[in-house]
Image (cartoon, rainbow, N blue to C red; front, top):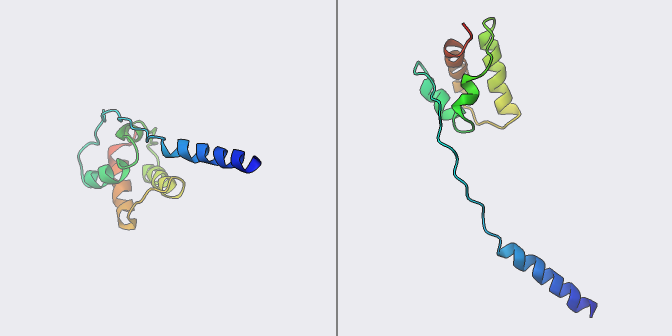
Length: 104
């Protein structure tokens, strides 16, 4: 009897899992765009692959050492969040962000 009960429980468990449908959702439209400039296409393709442009444009970038700030941000995205950034593109992205998104 216990074997039959155990078998029935396993069948219910796997049967309900097999019928689970994937969840589909629609992301909202992007509301911001990166400003055009040298290497903006690389920044858009690399950074925009993971998060909204709003995340970039609202950063409180300091006037002093903007390149250091953006280097730390890109490094964090790579090491903490696993962003796939081509090594040759890191300085291009940093230069673009520092030139374009630094507090005036």
